[in-house]
Amino acid sequence: MFSSPQAPLGPHHQEEPVSYPQVLTPEERLADAKKQLSLPRIVVICGSTRFMTEMTEADLRETKAGKIVVKPGCDMKSPHELWSDPVEAEALKVRLDDLHRAKIRLADEVLVVGDYIGDSTRAEIAYARSLGKPVRFTHPEVTPDA
Image (cartoon, rainbow, N blue to C red; front, top):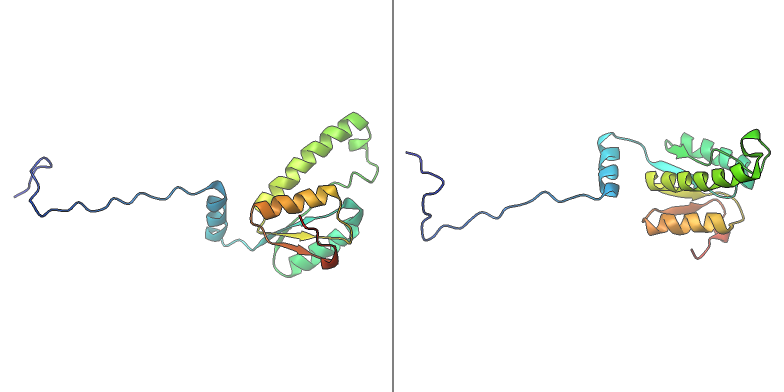
């Protein structure tokens, strides 16, 4: 015999606690997706573009260590037709800074390359740390208090 859902409950009945699925932050969902996909750790390379040669070397070493590497894709300190117009160059710089912050959000860790840390790199380090990302340095003696 089945009881209807409106049937009165007995005097000793206790309702089971209802558990709701925990709402994950976008960062937690990303970490979970990377884990489910069995992705290797992702490292983003930061630093002044004056160290592009060192960034390429760091890319090689991190890749050899089995990591996915993302790094700056444009060296605006070197002449190129894509940023020869000063107005376009300034707009591109803003977009590239936004893009690099997205790379930091995507990454599991940050590697700062070079023996000099300017304002942009200092801001990237502070941003990465605000997200809880571990930050490593090729030249630990220049570690900022960011």
